[in-house]
Amino acid sequence: MPVLLITPRRFEDERGWFSETFSDRAIEALGITHPFVQDNHSMSRPVGTLRGLHYQAPPHAQAKLVRCVRGRIWDVAVDIRKGSPTYGQWTAAELSAANGSQLYVPAGFLHGFVTLEPDTEVIYKVSSYYAPESDGGIAWNDPDIGLPWPLPEAGPTLSVKDGKLSSLADFDSPFAYDGVPLTPVA
Ligand SMILES: Cc1cn([C@H]2C[C@H](O)[C@@H](COP(=O)(O)OP(=O)(O)O[C@H]3O[C@H](C)C(=O)[C@H](O)[C@H]3O)O2)c(=O)[nH]c1=O
Image 1 (cartoon, rainbow, N blue to C red):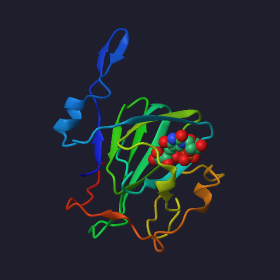
Image 2: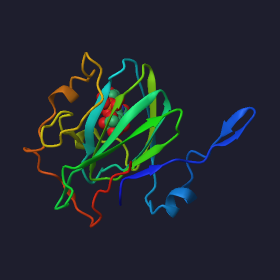
Image 3: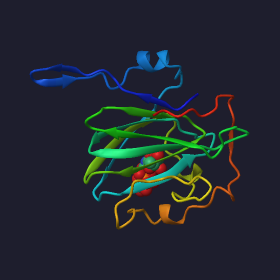
């Protein structure tokens, strides 16, 4: 599956707008055939809160459908599928309450984001339940990935866990390539 940027239609009128933010029928039409089993919601107070780069290993691998419902984020997916011609390459998009865009991050990709406004809230669907024993990650500033994070002067606000994630060079990926290379979403 490719990484997808999805922008559901907003029906505007004098009251504001309405949008179908999730529809099984609509995502199946995009080729997403697996179910989503859990909704996550995180709130990040400081601008420059950086959560990532995370994955869950098989058999608990997670595909994610991410959207920002308050504030703005720079949302990133990094290809970590063994044998992929785009291994270690990334794509990103700005998701915001204003644009209503969503990023679909397939299993086999690292996911992370940095907030661009205070009190930013992110909601995302995942295709497997949380399995902490299968939780893993790569350092946000890994030199082989080289993400150009839009950060505040003071640098990112990280969890202790995210501050000590391993490098891509030392990583033995549990994910296999599915024949679909990463193509940029924006
Ligand atoms: C992810 C998760 C966490 N938790 C608990 C575990 C901790 O006590 C607390 C915070 O967890 P964590 O620091 O892992 O949360 P984030 O740093 O936002 O992690 C997430 O951020 C990046 C962007 C992701 O894509 C993943 O979904 C996920 O790794 O929530 C749960 O109870 N269920 C869950 O599904």
